[in-house]
Amino acid sequence: MSWGRSWRPYVSVGERRARAFLEMEKLRKKGWKIQPVKIAGRQIARTFWGRSWCEHLEKFSDFENRLPRGQTYVRNGSVCHLEIKPGKIAAKVSGSDLYDVTITIKALAKPHWKRLRESCAGQVASLLELLQGRLSDHVMSFVTDRDKGLFPKPREISMDCSCPDWADMCKHVAAVMYGVGARFDEKPELLFLLRGVDHNELISRATAKSIVAKTRKTGRRTLDEQSITEVFGIEIEAPVNAVTRAAASTSSKVVTRPRKKRDLVAGEPTGASPSRPRGQVADATTVRNASSRTGRRRKRS
Image (cartoon, rainbow, N blue to C red; front, side, top):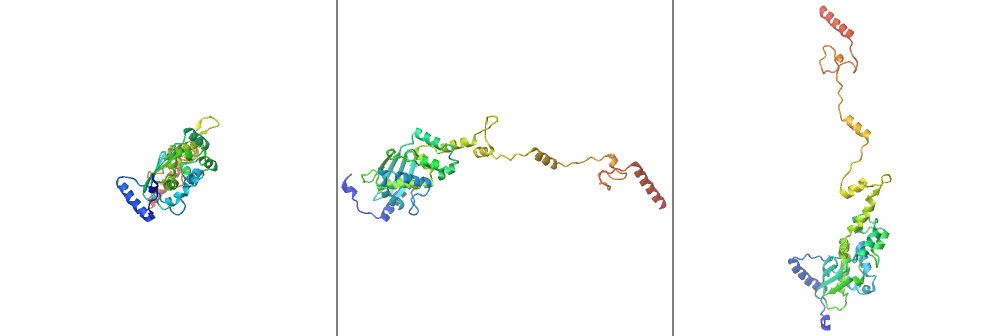
């Protein structure tokens, strides 16, 4: 790098954006999936994970003096593309030219991740709560811890930019660092991807304690109905007691009482409803008297 190269003519923001737009359109036509960082207003990061990322980086003296140089760049849309992969951040930043920024971050060490999982075991209720940052103070203190949390330390970060600035953290790298925080607002799961760990492990260990219950009598492990529904997606109907089941069965049947011969009155058609009250039986004397009265009326006529 020569000193003459570092003193380039001033290029207005509008002209920079126009140049960057043309370059990004060329990449788009080649099949690139362009992912720009867009900031609405002055606040760069608004959610728990985005703010925690930015605040963590600002805790270190190596970064606190140089990070502010990138705030203007990220706010005015100079981070034209930012992609997060396991252990790597690749970006393109508009300056006097379109610069390539590469940031590599070491994966979280397995013993470190194990301690973090054990510290949070049973404390994270759901994946939604984890990604939205709705965590207890206990969990938040662990994941955001300066030395033992999820975020990388300066010695775990390597930076490179194609600009002529000799500093490790130039304003283009600083803009990308803040852009990562803004990206975590949209997709907080990218933090776990970046550190090379699976965020679902925090949930699985938490739910394992809540859904496996030990019965006092048998000592066997059982799953309650609510947990079965959550884990397997099976809807379980509410139990019906024996009395309710028997009543429902009885009401659904039509009870027909067979008619006996003695219930039938002479001359009454089978199946006709009797005129007398239900259960009353006509005796033989009544039948004979009725027949004699009918005969006498016929003779008179």
